[in-house]
Image (cartoon, rainbow, N blue to C red):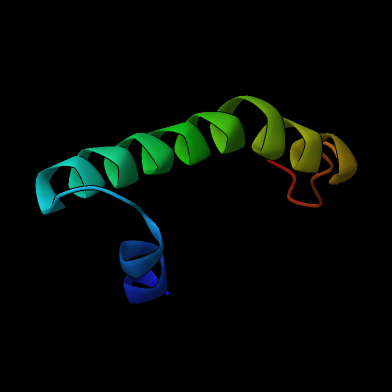
Length: 52
């Protein structure tokens, strides 16, 4: 998949590298602030069967 993105992007290699790093950072940001909290809200709460 990386090679498909690499061939699709325009410009010299250094520009493509910076652009791919920016896209990766945006994906991590979106998952951390929107994706993971949404999935966590769908998971069961703090139910525990272990007693002390």
